Length: 257
Image (cartoon, rainbow, N blue to C red; front, side, top):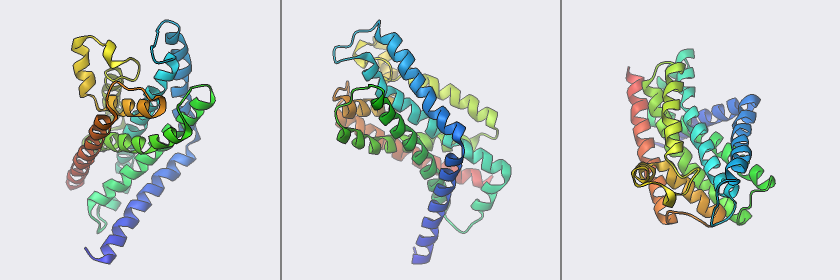
C-alpha cells in the first residue's frame, strides 16, 4: 500500500471518528441520559437489593457497580450502530462508500467513534460512582479499566455494525437491540455472582461475552472475580476481533446492495 493510500485511509478513520464524537458532544440529552439511567439503577437497585442480599466480599452496591458500567458499555456500543441507519437514510453513507478507500477503514472509523463514546460514558460513570460512595481498590486500577472498556466496546460495536448493516429501519434496529441487550444483561454476572446460579443458568452465563467483560472490570475495581483475569481478557479480546471482522464483512456487503 502506497503512502498516499495509507494517509487517505487514516484520514477516513479520523474524519468518521471525529464526526461521531462531535455528534455525541452536541447531544446533551444523550450524555445526561447515558449517565443518569445507569446511576439510577446503581443507587436504587443497589440500595434495595443490598438490603436483602449478603455478599461475602463486601457491599452489594459495590459488587453491582462494575456490572452497571458493563451495561452502559453494552448499550452505548450497540447504539453506535444506529448511526449507520441514519447515514443511510440521509444519503451520507452512499457518499462515503463511493470514496476510493477500502470499506474496512470506513467501518473502522464508525467503530472508533462508537467505541470512544462508549468509553467516555463508562469512564465517567466509573468516576462518578466512586464519588458517590462506591469503594474501589485504587485510582490506578480504575485507569486499567479503560483498555478493558475499549475491548468490550469494540466487540459490541462490531455487533451493532453487523445488525445495522442488515436492518433497514430505526424501529427494526431498536427492536432487535432490545431483544439482544436485556437477555445479554440478565444472563451475565452484572447483578449476581456466577457461583450462586442454578446449573441450567450457568451455561448461558459462561457463554456470554458480557460476563467476562464485567468480571474483568470487577477484578480491576474490587479485586474479586468469579473468573480468572487472564481468561476474561482472552475472551473479550477474541470477541472484539471476531465481531469487528464480522462487522466489517457485513458493512462491506451492505455497500454492494
